[in-house]
Image 1 (tube, rainbow, N blue to C red):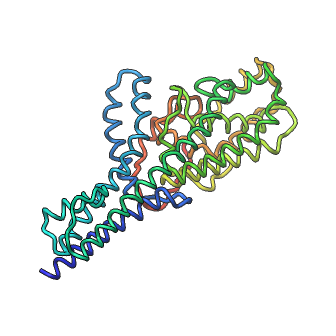
Image 2: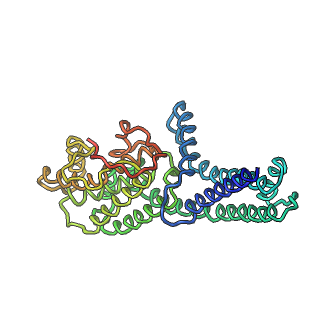
Length: 366
């Protein structure tokens, strides 16, 4: 019996330590880490929301329902932490000499800091203090976590909404280029790449250290952080490869900042992509689509390079760097349909959120 009680104490201590470590890695550690408990909760709720979503009759209804997915998962996390801590201390109290019934009451009293039950034994009372401090610590983590994540969400969405004004809803590179050319002239872009480089840098940091942000949908139905990223990257790629204007080194830096950010987020979620694609590797955009876009831009009066074959090669060489991470993240976030991004993800299926192994790298999409 003594050995069994010692084993119960050790099991409860290990379980509570595991939960605390999961909470610290989720909330405190600034570097994004894959936490099994968090991923399990997100996967479970994803199954529920997808099951209901498949039965909705309109995209607006589906989007409104999926907008609740991220917040529900985040609020479920502290509930799961609390329940596991509560359950973990029950065998600890039993191992210290309390009956099972009293152990349940003592654990609930200690975790909630109500203090209406005292076991009357030194070892068990020390365990009460530890559990009470643990409960207070989890509450403090939650209080600090939610404002931080909503602050990052607000900063992200400010640029997404501004892009919708310039690039349409859903955003597209063609609409962005044509609208800016008509209203302000293409020199406008020279002052914008710094802003988007900063946005991509913050996106990478926030969506790996606070991974739940990837599932927070935009405030507008047809907008999304990932389709906005795709529109900006395509716009910059078209500017540097297809337009007959003075080359912008900052636009190229923005493209690099963007595809590194998307790769980092995709790697965090263990989504497959080729980390070093060949410049001539196939991409999800077909030459016919590119030629149709060139005709549209020419009709709108944009200055195009004379050699469209070379322009296509240059564009494809830029696009291959972010093509697969972009499409995989569109599938992950269940992004609304948008040109040249989420409109071509049907064959990808829904990514598995619980794959905890190393990043899988494959060839680019054909």
